[in-house]
Image (cartoon, rainbow over all chains, first blue to last red; front, side, top):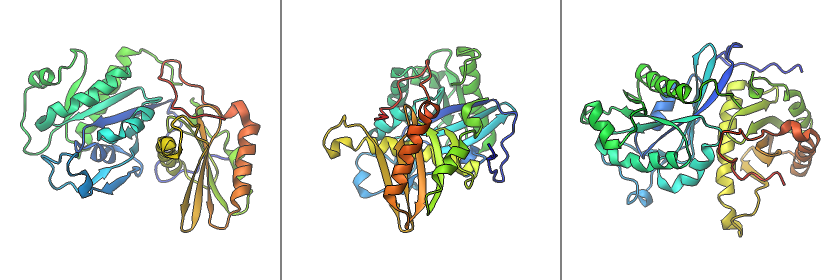
Length: 200
Length: 142
């Protein structure tokens, strides 16, 4: 065979036995690109473009006026959770006009992490609806922006109309610890739903 | 061990790089996971490119209607840079083959070699859909 993978700085352990594709989704400007960038152990793939005036009417920047770029295709990153499990994170664009790409991106994914913003919880309904439509299990992580209102978990659950078993956690997408925990809550949830599911 | 955790097909990809001016080759599954890569590209970079190429394929396919018929099967995407090209073709059901090359490459030779490789490997190159997953995106192996 003779073609041992040429390794960059980051070493992917031989003990890794399962590679799992996970979607990172959420509405426009919720922090998906930041989340994937924070967690990826390799240089993440980003497809950001400067936002133009043409999108001003449809892409609501309420709450993030300093935002100047938006993802037009996808984010991608890799995180090794433990010796046996590596997650491949695929971030999908938040705007509705990219729904088609979104559907393709679901192919092969085991689950999704829905990022939410307490200032615009209603904007998450379309995202969760699309996932449910395709039978894609998900967990919800509130990306706690500075200055965004803090609500008790129960109120957020109610506002998002979550099923009792759907995990709900809070994270800061700029910070690895809480973001990793958000992913772990999703993975644990997937394991309870599909015990010992075969990877491909 | 999963297929894409190894690089068993890598040597076959190296074959296609015998075309003068070809740079790298990547085999990926329709869900954007790396299946195999040629020797000259690192694994991390190959994984990132595999994800990007799956997005490229998806977006390419969504332009079918612009070309005439929404349901026309996608066959190839060609990307041109100032100093080179990226070729992306279907490689059986649920798999794609991508090759990069310098601007001096003979484009016809590359695409011919890529098709030959796809033909020769046949079943070995396909990623059958997971039984528990949604339908594969409409990649037509044509």
